[in-house]
Image 1: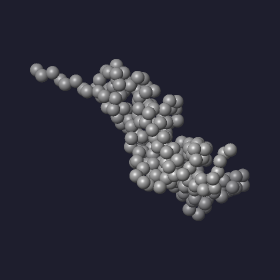
Image 2: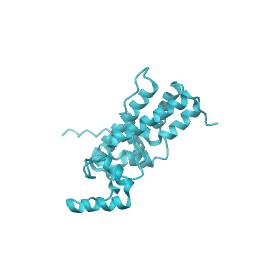
Image 3: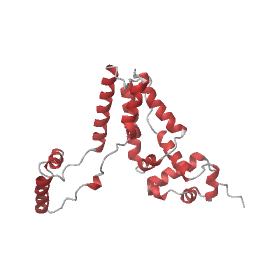
Image 4: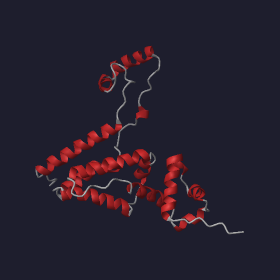
Length: 227
């Protein structure tokens, strides 16, 4: 009887299996044991390719960075930055677990450093000083990875009753106590129904990104310096 061929395991296969598992079942499902099961091997087989769970998570982010659209050759600095950052956001939307992992990384892999180096280089090649580039990268912060540091998530919003009468009563109570919050809530809603409109997170992200890029450009043209 012919021998059953052994499963070939590589670092890329381990990382890809972990990404697929996280996409399907969430990041909490990703463990050395579960990834090994996905590959049909014993957990110890993974340690030849990833040092530990932290190395596994960092490697998963490296795979996502490889999905980012590259900047076009000769593309203006602003267009190139915008393309890469919006591409990072698109990748993040396909891998909902990634934000939490990015926020917990304490070491920077070569892939992470290369991406940050490329982003910094786009500023410098666009005529920005090293000083202004330094502060611009700080201002962008997590936006280079495709997400904004929002103060509150949508889940933190006040629950809105389904009953129209109770909803109208709630709106009047909010109007009396928090009129300014209601004003901006109604601005993005249909008429007086605060439940009819929701923030378009992609629009808000691009809006803020464009504001920042406009400000960076004005500072560059003015010869701004932190000193």
